[in-house]
Image 1: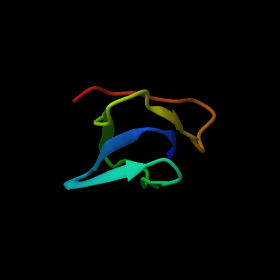
Image 2 (image 1 turned 90 degrees about the vertical axis):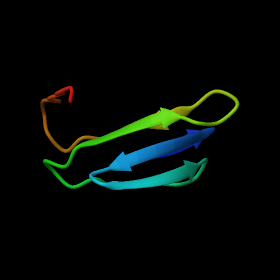
Image 3 (image 1 turned 45 degrees about the vertical axis):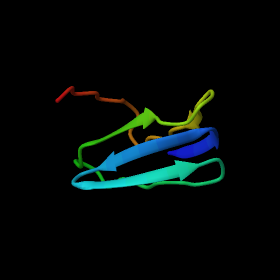
Image 4 (image 1 turned 120 degrees about the horizontal axis):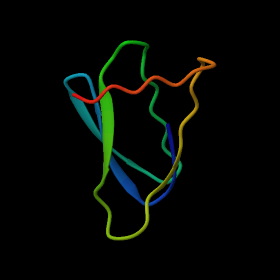
Length: 59
């Protein structure tokens, strides 16, 4: 996932990182992950999935 605008706190497994515009995070398959808008404005992100089908499971 790439942050295009704003700030996101991204959780990847047990790790938490803060990403800002221009930052990219890569998540391996089968690793729980999520993000929250922790900036003061709009968060715009681009997420690319290698699979033809996106499967979403909620924790």
